[in-house]
Length: 498
Image (cartoon, rainbow, N blue to C red; front, side, top):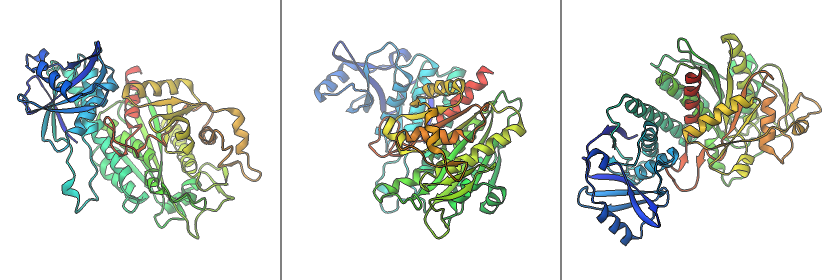
């Protein structure tokens, strides 16, 4: 991750500015003039015209120059008096990715507020990412992320700007952790190693960490996690991280789906695309990293995070179609489809979260995060995640946080008429129902494990969690870290509103 600082002086040999379209002409958008700096924009625009450069949002054009040595011009679309925060975040991310291999660069993207400055800083920290842990002979060929960035700003000496920079660094750090976990192959990331890695990441932070192994899970009645993980040589785990700051203003529980590899079990997935099933623990990665980030930012909101971890494999011990299991708390489930396993591990986590909430006091909301259904991708594509809830106010709070964080989420219903499709002739509920509306059916299944008076939000991030297309903005190929920023922002809003 790049180190980011604030400055009022242009000094690096590489400079990032924006370009926009105004009255069908290109215009340079930067704040260099505001600090008394100089940039020959007339010459720069002439070169851009000769190159046929575009002002399309996120497009980066490299222009060899004299002072500075190289200008990276990133498109901002149509010229505006002030630019949308997410547009600035993505522009900074695009430029940062283009600067891979560079040591230092100045960023002079336009901004006039701390919020706009924060978006630029976040774009830099999010864009400066690569995953090379498993490269050997090709490692030297990979360009390292930009090492250092300086944001040129008239706000550089203000306390809010310095605070925004610190926050951006924390977001970049824990987004990188989330992405690393998602990108790590299942040969190296198992339920046990995931738990150990997060325990190490949480050490020295004051967080409490509890890890239940396979023997404890079975003895205590965690039938969902146990049944999904019993077919694997890598046994399941429940990772529980607690953050309880003094005078906490609110309390939330985060529950994450953590399938470190999903073969589908006896509902075996097709070979094509199965390699992406190493990312089926993205929800667990997001909630685990989010609670550590929230503690580092010292947000006065209590969080209990649960990573429900298992590897869904085939063996003589694996759960069979038609098996009946007992979820933590006693409800029985007929497992008609072992590939609908995420909802089973989450059910254990949701019941446990509510139980702990009653012991600790009022639980203002439970938020679960999961790469739960392929139907989510069909409905909303690969860049917009789904939100389902039993509480309109909690959903509104989350969507507000997501918008501020720059993450795309869309509310979806939980139609009562779909509940009947989950009826089982021999158990309390079946784990699959109608195929049409499958994302909603999965949400309805989870709702069965939530008390009616307990506010709850379900996030299905199946598509956005893993970018299999080209990199864009601050988003790399591979794990994206989706939901982490929204969870952090929601905690911040809760603290501010309490």
